[in-house]
Image 1 (tube, one colour):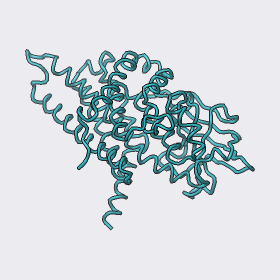
Image 2: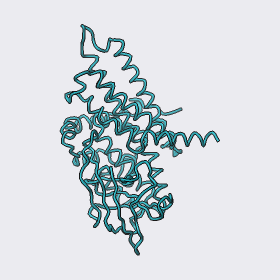
Image 3: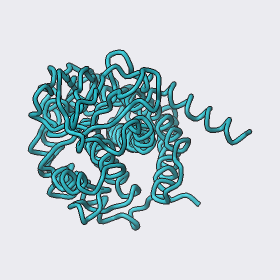
Length: 383
């Protein structure tokens, strides 16, 4: 039986995240969105509340919570602002989790407490201008030079590229096309030869900072290598399995936020002396939205349960991410439509959900990539 979240089971945690979002995020979301402000100080507050090291064990300064609890926190934050939810997801499930999952004890003790407290913000560098969905086709190189590796190349679409204090970066240490020729490195901000580009001007998720990372003869000591040489690609794929659950939870939060916006509006707005909700077509649309959101949540919760039980989550994570992200786009689109002209204005949050949702079908593997992953996994089970 798959886990189904209820208010009774996670009431305190859910309420804590909900209260945080209401008090510290909601009042400023449009200011941050309009000006593309990445609110660094907010992430210090998130750290103080334990939301920057959600799955990091307590011995490293984290909250030591389960993936189910992580999903609950991310959903509540994303219901209010997808941008902040995206940054919380990237910090927790990619940068911090890569170090937690594959780094040695010295590296964990050095970096995880700073990341979990929010003192440091983490970035994760895999995508390049010439290799998006083709994660194995990296051009960034790391050439051995005594006790160091020299990194050259660039990464693009990197969350926290400018404000991040540390990045986990994948670079080629072998021949191009060799899946065992990629290694992962921890690179700190301020390392000579390590710089970032300008902030990208995005359609949505505008308060979540996205930019490029550049490496020009960047010398990184061997003790910054995560695991062994050649293990980076396998590490990245395993991280993406869990990362897809994060994007699924982010998507679920956006879908719920859009649905609640539409439900509240249609239950108050009157046309022809009747509430909009009472028109059959409107009620049916909201019924479809509610059903799809519940189905998405079941997929997300199943994937999180598998993750907590240390089971393989490749198929389950891809299914959750595929379906929840498409539901987020559908729900936000319907919310704009149900609000009519008001849905097209910034006086209501529907338009922001609409803009933010689309990235969920692209980031950490497009919908097409998720279908490829799912198809590959079900073929294995059929053989």
